[in-house]
Amino acid sequence: MSDSSWTRTSPTTGRSPATAPGLLHSLGPLLLEWLPRQRWFAGKGRPITGFDLVSATELLPVGGRPGTPGLLHLLLDVEQNGQRADCYQLLLGTRSLLPPSLVPAALGQATGGPLDGLTVYEGLHDPRLTAVLLERLRAPGRTGRLRFFTEPAANVPAGLPPRLSTAEQSNTSVIYGDEYILKVFRRVSPGANPDLELSLALARDGSRRVAAPAAWFESLQPPGAGAPDGIGAEPATLGVLQRYLPGSADGWELALRAMDDGTEFTADARALGAATAEVHAALARALPTGSLDRRRIQLIAATMAQRLDTAAAEVPELRPYRTRLRAAFHDLSELGGTGERVAAQRIHGDLHLGQALRTGGREWLLIDFEGEPSRPLSERRLPAPPVQDVAGMLRSFDYAARHRDPAAPTAGAWAERHRDAFCAGYAATSGTDPRDRPVLIRAYETDKAVYEVLYEARHRPAWLPIPMSAIDRLAANPPPRRITP
View 1 (cartoon, rainbow, N blue to C red):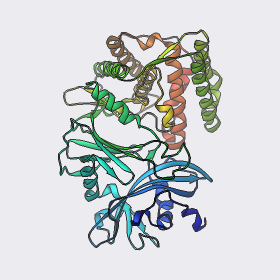
View 2 (cartoon, rainbow, N blue to C red):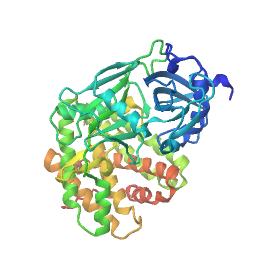
View 3 (cartoon, helix red, strand yellow):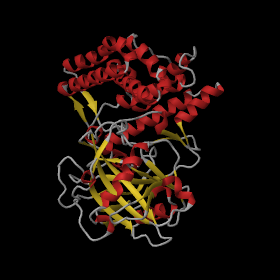
View 4 (spheres, helix red, strand yellow):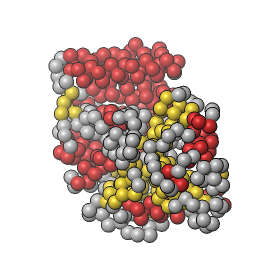
């Protein structure tokens, strides 16, 4: 790749090192090696062929005075195979000399350009820099092309000690004391991220089932920003500071513990179903609702069938089931053909046991409302049937049951018991039992299982038998069963 690949015209202007010519010339070779190693980088397996700088903002001067770190915020379009792939948010620290504690976070030493000779590193690993982020979030206003907001009722204390979260996730989070957690979105798109949009709507509606946002920040359109579908078409959510819940445990951890201990989890599953119904009701109050007509239902069914074909082309184990699995999507399409309209509203979008926290007071809260990260933001913000969230949670109970041993003889019964407990709790609170919509629930559960097969085949082949056991069950098309918890 020639040097010119890294030095395309930046839309930003100014005299600071962040916007001086040659910034990408010095950073490009470091990013080329570093980006593919990050868990949140979505383009693994495809070569990076270039970068376009969307915006660069100095949150701390990057001049390189000894002992003084700089903090550079970047929005960077990454090109792969000659085409724009994704826009990523980076917070890069700069120092003339890196202390030993930060060596694992290093990208390397910049050569040439405004950062020449400085060591560049992942800024979110540096407590001095994450403390700066917190202070900036406490003060609404604008810095360069970034804009910061604070909820009027929030009272975020100064000086909370930061620590980087070690949780496995597709973004990066920093915990401040035991009071707040900042989620920094890595892949960003124009528009409000549902994690902020929905959490804010729920908190303002008075819901106790959500960690209320206290502050957030977004990008603004840089002068001369190009394509209308790129960053800059409208402000993009970059990060959300929310209430932290120390002492809580997620549903996945609790379910596995119950499996290992041989204890019952059905009461918790039922309570989680009730909490999910409460969240759906609050979202329906706070945001617009509607219904899916025949065209929309049939489009959803066709998209599910296409995802099945794509997955089967990559995963040979799926191919023998393809015809029988398509029956679920055919039935969904036929449902649309009857003229029946399906209620739709804003939903969580990626609900599973890991997205539910049980507090010390045994209350369930839902977190991470950004939806399925692999889908476009515009799609994740569309109204959808609440049964999609229910299907995601049903798949999660099946995963928990088979996580230790997919072939365990008791796994199926454990999963079925807890799936029904969840649905019963949902029905008792909402007045609508998702098990009364077998066509919808089977289609969404099948679609989720197909997604899981593709994911495990790509990332965790040893786990492939878990979703394949569901594929075997769903392909058999058993009549709907109901077990009273």
